[in-house]
Amino acid sequence: MASLGQELKRERELRGISLKEIAGSTKINMKFLQALENDELEILPGEFFIKGILSAYARCLGLEKEYVLNKYYEDSLLKEQDSEVEQRTEKSSPNVFPRKLNFFSLVFISVLLFIVFLSFYFIARPRKSAEAYPETQIAVPIQEQEPIPPPKELPQIKEASELGLKISFLHDTWIQVYADGELVLDGLMSEGEEASVRAREELILHLGNAGGISYSLNGRIGKPLGVLGAVRKNIKIDFDNFNEFLVQSEQEEKEK
Image (cartoon, rainbow, N blue to C red):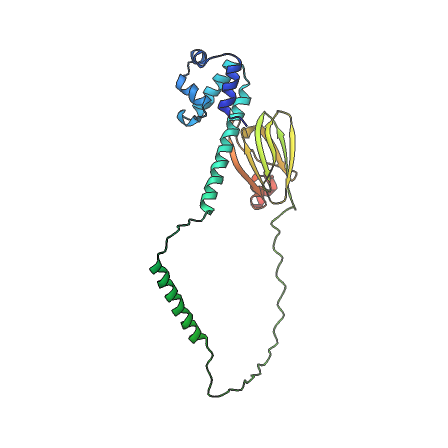
């Protein structure tokens, strides 16, 4: 899949427009435009400046601003996920330091193992007892125990056997949803669309426009996840924090 910089460069070349023309039209430094097309975003001074360059670049080429920005959010999330996977892989990989053993080291280890073996042999060898002691059994009086009352039933933590998420898109929003570790929703959703997802244990959401959606969990209204244009990553919903995402009724607030 082509990166954001590759797509922008291809669209510019298809239109026969040079970087110099874009720099003259948008008043953006050529160095920053070249960094954008080469996917060297670390050269650019901050996310707010990156969004401004992307918007001006898209406007100059006649591209949809929302598409370009959502592509930027998607690339950023994928890079972050790849970085997390690499870190987990490095932590889980054992460090192996091979050592070359010379002849004298092998001899020393062999002698040491032989001594350890002899020690275990003499320690573990059974000894003859002078006298055989007959086993005696002691009768222990059985006391009647009072019946133990059954334990009180603990309140159920889970309110349902699964998590049901229903999303209504109030504005165009890029979104990813993982249900029990499986990617079930991915892409740019348009205003007016709806989506439903179910999971047995947990849901994880990534949003490119947190204020562009409303949602419900198991039929109950959910709290806002952010303002328009806000990027939210790794929003985890499970049975332990389920109630934290719900709008509480007046009765529930009084019971607290």
